[in-house]
Structure formats: C-alpha cells, structure tokens
Length: 322
Ligand code: BTN
Image (tube, rainbow, N blue to C red; front, side):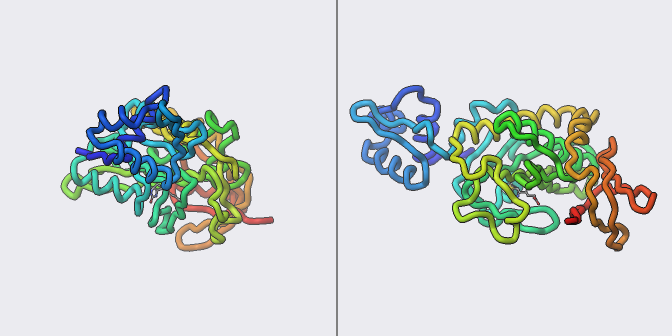
C-alpha cells in the first residue's frame, strides 16, 4: 500500500478539479485543519508548483504550473500505475526495491530529479530538475534476449510520444539514445534481475530519462557538446510533461504486448540516426572504424569496413567527427 502525504493529496485534488477548490473544502475532504492546508500549499509553492489563490473561491493549479503530479499522469494511463517523487537516488533503484516487495508489472515511478541516476555501461545519468526521469516494472515471461527488444520498443515509444507532443523529428542512435537535431535528448536503460532457478527473467526495469528543458545553469560540461533538451530553454507546462510520460508508457505497453512479433522493428530501423555515418567501434577487443549501413531486421547494426560487413548485436559506437 502506498500512503500519500498531505501535499500529494492536495495536488491530486487540484489536478482533477475544473474550478478553484476552497481551503475549507480541501480541509474537510482530507480531514485536516485549514491551517494545515495553508501550510501545505506554501510548501508546494516552495517546491516549484504554481498554485493560484483567489479570495472566496480557493486554490487552483495555474495553467503555467511546470510540475506534473501523479493524478495528471495516472488519469491517462491504461495499464500502468505511477508514483511520483520529488527526488529519488534513481527511479530504477526505487522500482527494484518495489519489485522485490512484490509490486505488479506496470508499476512506474517518476522523479523530478535524481541524485544518482544511472546510465548505460556503468555511466551516471545527470538528472537535474527540468527532465522527466521514470522507470517501469516489467515481469516478462520470456527469455533474456527478448529484454533487448523491450528496450528497442521503448525507444520507438519515446520517439512517437515526443513527436506527438513536440512536433520535432526524433531519431534513434543505436542502440537506444533518442536524438533531435543531432543532439541526444533521451537515454534508455533496461536492467534485469535473473531467476537462478529457472534461468529466466525475474523482472526487468525499464528506465527512461528525457531532457525536457535545459537545466538552469546549462548541461554539465561532460555532456554539453552532445546533449540537448526537447523544448530548449522554453517553459513547458505540467500538462505537456504529463502527456509525454503517459503517451510513452501507453505506447510502450501496446508494443510490449506484441513483443514476440516485433511489430515496432520497421519503425525502429527507419529512425536510425547512424546510417551513412563514419563510426569507431570495438569488436573482439579491437578498436575499428567503418561506415554504418543500417540496422537489420533483428536490430543489429551493420557496419561496412573495407568491403566487409560487420554485425553488432549490442554495445556502443562513437561517431567520428570529420
Ligand atoms: C543512458 O543514456 O546511458 C541511459 C540513461 C537512462 C536514464 C534513466 S532516468 C530514469 C532511470 N533511472 C536511472 O537511474 N536511469 C534511468
């Protein structure tokens, strides 16, 4: 069971209200004093929620409030249930903990910022306020290899959700980084827990980090040359952010239900950002260079090198700057 605190209860009330809600009504509904409501509203404002107060009418989430709350997203989700945290070390760590406690497939956690966000290949994923960082619990009954396909399906889901909500063309840098205008706006990391008895997957955690707006002081110098935010420096309201998360999760769950037939693969391949680019890559411990041909129908990257074609099924390539 998840216990909600007063702040979350107030937010969820305001999110579904079509008119201002009086302090008196909130107090009666949540069984607390009006003073407690007033204190909570002020702490929410300090946390960045824009809440207007009109005399005699009450409180309302302002149309330009930048921070979504759980109710805004959950009201649109089909097969998932999301918990929203102001801050987490890593939403994927939170989901792993919940998975061990028996949480069902479709449990999702979103945080406004992460203090120890994880990226692929042991890297950290810098996650300041201004991004959407969320993880989803999957309990697949398939072989570990298919988990890779779930990651590719997630890349397609993010592209479709972003294009619907921001109108920019999204491309996939194999394996699963999302690029807009040649810059990375999103990273995806799938982690699995294995069942030693069956050799199958006990559960998998799909983690998605999207840069929505540029951090207040710009991107960290280690990623500034290749990172971008979907909406640049523009202010993005909570509804748009909630729509992006809900659309991503809903589209992903539809693709995940048909993972076996890989219905998303044509879409995945057609979005390849690397096609035609010169890259360096590692194969059998050697650092090599070649030109990317395409992603094949199994999801492997095909690279041409001196007339030979190399196929990479996993790993990472770096684009050579000419
Ligand atoms: C990458 O680009 O290397 C993958 C980044 C994945 C980041 C997301 S943010 C939500 C989830 N929590 C994490 O700690 N990592 C993933």
